[in-house]
Length: 173
Figure 1 (cartoon, rainbow, N blue to C red):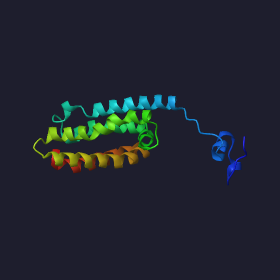
Figure 2 (cartoon, rainbow, N blue to C red):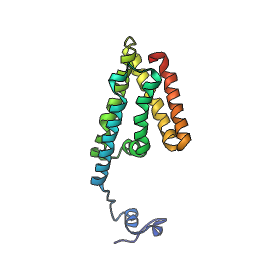
Figure 3 (cartoon, rainbow, N blue to C red):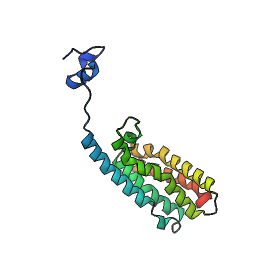
Figure 4 (cartoon, helix red, strand yellow):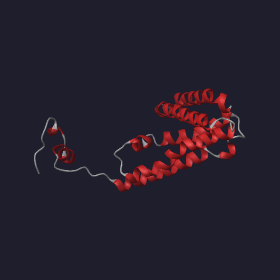
C-alpha cells in the first residue's frame, strides 16, 4: 500500500486514506441502497396514487382537494427527507434512478389531468402551464416544510396550501 499523498491525507484513516491517495476505489453497498430506495420508491408511488385519486378531482372544494393532494406527498417527503436529493444526482446508477422515474414523469400529467377535470374548457397549453407552475410552487416549499418541526411545520404546510390555493383558485377554484 502506498502512503497517503496530499494535504490533509495524514488526518484520514483506513479506507478513506486509500481513496484519497488513489490506491483504492470506494465501495458502495448498492444492493442494500437499491432495496431501501426501491421500498421508498414504492411508498412514493403509493403517496402519489392517494394524492391523485381522480374520483376526487371534481367532487371536492379546492381547499379539501389541496389537503388530499398535498398531505400524502408531504408526509412521504418528511418520512424520507433525502429521497429526492438522492435521485436528483446525475451520477446515480440507472437501477436506483429508475425507481423514481415513473413518478417524476407522471406528475405533470397527473396534475394536468386534475386541472382538466376541474376546468375542461381551459386550453391545453394553459392547463400544462398551470400544472408546471403549481408543481414548482410545491417543490419550492417542500424543503421548508421538511426542515421545520412541530408547530412551524404545520404553519409552513398551511402556507404551502395557501400559495397553491391562491394560484389555482382562479383557474380551478
